[in-house]
Length: 409
Ligand code: CTP
Image 1 (spheres, rainbow, N blue to C red):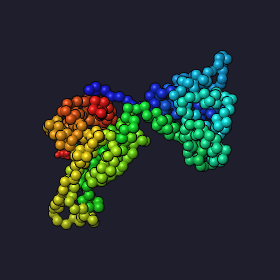
Image 2: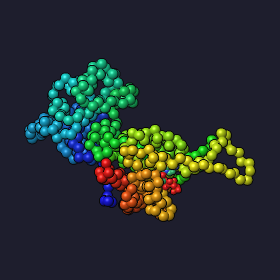
Image 3: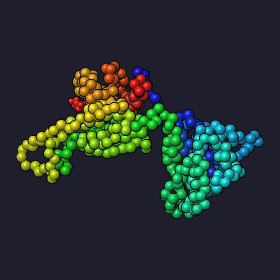
Image 4: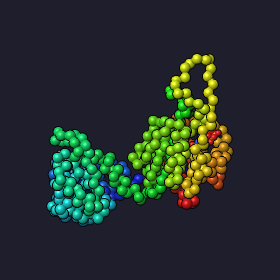
């Protein structure tokens, strides 16, 4: 197994033609260009003359590392081929889209380089309208946007907020981060786990003693949240069932369900497991919970307090019994005999593989940012990995899962 990891980015090497028209939101395009590049895309820019009043071509050219085109002819009178530009693009993004250019798009007018590229575009076109609130609500604007929608363009709706006019309402161009999400979502079908549904559970569980106290553990949830993010980046539709943790997924497509106890975690896992393709259970589920939960706060009276604990249901083993087509994997955190105990859990819980780590090794286990894992598959084959930060470990696990699917699907 290669120790390196793949980076999944739905915009990697995609060609984005950004068309900028003359609205104040044009200044946000500098940030938008940077975000596209960060996602691995290549960006070329066309802009109208009036857009140049709001953001300079020089700024955009430096950021995009490409010459910016704002006319049919360049300064030496050479023709700027709008057809070639549109053909180069895997996607055309018009941001901001003013009411004026929207009207032109809707009616096929073609009097500048942006409208010419729009009419020449063969691939998906995204538009991010930006105008004052009354203009955005005008029936003509709505009609024109409907026209674009019917032509197959994707409208990235304007947002609510303060407008350049001083008024407040709907009309602000969507934030660059939102525009990126729309375009990423469109290209996500090209990723290796597109169409696959993934369940990840993570974090500790809290088992109530009374309304204010609980039995819990020191799991931070970092490893599982990183896993949810990395599976989402690989195109999967991820549901993260998360115990009490401050960690949050950064990928917007991850559906997060917050729970407290092992029982709640079990109920949520069972409710979706049948429709799941891949389940990775990384949660540090409490093995025991108080037998009786006091309905009011237990008062301090005697010198000692005896709590009777009963076993919680083993979620992973329960899913292992129900498993049909699913790939099912778990984690094993051990202090000693790491590999031996982890191997026993594969058979006992009917797993495809287990991710083993040691709680007594420096840099591994709970509440640290790093982990050193060994993956053991159901044929007892061992795959060792270096000590890495948890995000990179998550990438390794996603990479391993992809290889496993290739050989076992
Ligand atoms: N697990 C679970 N439900 C439980 C306990 C554990 O789903 N009630 C899962 C964990 O999410 C993990 C795997 O089982 O993926 C192994 O957990 P671990 O705590 O290492 O082992 P246990 O099975 O609890 O056994 P032991 O604590 O005795 O090592």
